[in-house]
Image (cartoon, rainbow, N blue to C red):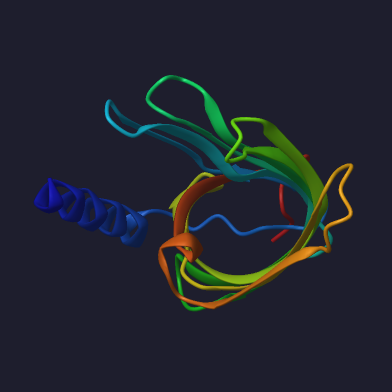
Amino acid sequence: MKKLLQGILVCLILTALSSQHSYAQKGGFMAYGSLNYQHNNKSGSQFSANPIGLGYFFNDHVVAGVNYGFNRIENSSSVKINNQHEAGLFYSDSWSLGKGFVIIAQLDTHYLWGSTMGVDDQQNHYNGYLARLYPIMAIGLGNGWSLKAKFAELSFRSTKQKHSDEVRTNNFIAGVNGSTLGIGVSKNFFLHKKQS
């Protein structure tokens, strides 16, 4: 399986290197996202979006818009043990590293809400906020399509259980680990052709 994934990655990189690069332009739109699904008969399943968004290009490298993400985890009995949602605004800036390669810095500011299964088998509902800054490496696949890989993160998450006197739970993430890695795709849409 590992060799198959490596082969697919090499094919995508070769395709990107041989394809025409599509540049962003003012007035265009970008749709992006990543959907993930995992299933294990013993431990349960997970379905998530990290996140899905729609943005507007203010020039050839700055895009801002709205996005939405979710993470639903069910145990082997199909009982939800975690159900989180996040929605908000994003801002990103990009720099070309040569034909077909772009480095992107993105900032997400989100409102969070959801529930987790407590030790008493009751759903504990919470809400809060999240600020996340992360780099993305993008490979242009042509015709406005890009393969994107998030490879690190700096974020702050603060939540509070509803109907509770408990203090807020704050989480800070910095660096590279399993939760900061992700792969997705994007597509740019242009309302008019770019002037030469």
